[in-house]
Image 1 (cartoon, rainbow, N blue to C red):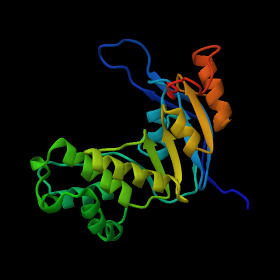
Image 2 (cartoon, rainbow, N blue to C red):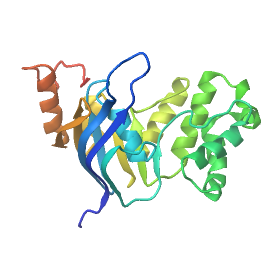
Image 3 (cartoon, helix red, strand yellow):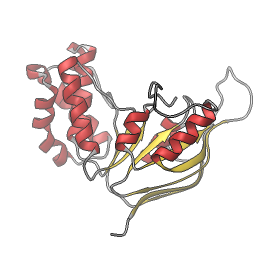
Length: 244
């Protein structure tokens, strides 16, 4: 079966202005990024902290418009998993769920259909109808995760695998994420965990200093990435499993 292209970035660059405390020209967070994403693919992104991975996710999501280059899209809704997108303390959990979904491009009818599942998954009980200002940080995280996991995007963007809440809810949230990753949903995953990348990703793109260094089959790219970071180091064995 022929693969269908969902997204293609060609020579994409993103520049941010320097702050008033730092002199000089604009900071180039991404420079000449080239990458493709195919429908149903699970694509991993690796690179050191500050390499530009999160900025790249925001470009893919459409949150950031590149300063140069082209972005080709042939997909439906694209969701960047964020645990607190659009949350307002004076609104109830239900109202924040609706607002968060709308901000991510979902139709109100789609959100309404998901509300019962969001409430059930979050295990907030009567607090789902209470203002967010009455929530603990753990309750906020559970609400945000539940919104993200119950809506059905065509492309899901994950900045690290997230497991939130108490021990029981962490198991539940981790299982839900893995189920989503094993579905037909197209996924882009940023992770520093080699084991997760090898288990879940078809391909990996390596980003360094805002540029595409290499991309290809997961094990091959992880080996090159590890070798570049620590010459002579081997993947696996007694390693910790972290690739950054």
